[in-house]
Length: 305
Image (tube, helix red, strand yellow):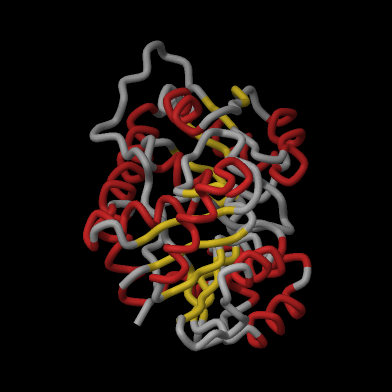
């Protein structure tokens, strides 16, 4: 089975992580093409057409020709995807292929009815949806919450020097993540930059605060990355529909909905190092169990049938 992720961009790098996991078990069968600029933090897609030019188009043509599944990378920018595919003689709902889409970020949240109508019109057989967005598609039998593998999962809890409880936050978008409220409520280090740099920096902390935005109310890639560091993760999860956990294992995330909630939790555990270590160990164990290439391969292949 040849699987081709294609679209304008993939900010959270989910497509690359899933493709890498699949390729561990099916050979070089899953590939990623994006038409937009290279990822700002240096993730390596197979082909970035804006970067690779004519050589990229030649390779893309071969990948499209050989694909069994075509899956949108997650930005819901279907015009960009179909304009590219049209250059290779592929039309919408081309029956040579099986079609799927992935939804992450704010697009589905901002206009779920329009996106649902488009997904139906384009005949997508599967809709892979981020856990915080699954509430919008929970009655659709074609919808699945998605799980992706991690680039790095620590083999053991890192030792953090000193006695001070260290807290961090790494917003992809400070306004969306509620960064101002978080930093007003607690003392924390705000980390930003390429994934591997931020991953190493996070691992020198005990607690990670993802977001406290009531309009999001769910965990995304940042929370998953923090669990893989063995961090206690605090996040507003009130919009994660219970049906999500029929498909993916519930991560050990501490639910919070405000800066006051964040402050109260940290005040409670500040002088309880054994409790903090218990939370951290639960986080890392979950990541080591469920964010492996093998688990992600099994999950996606089971749902691409």
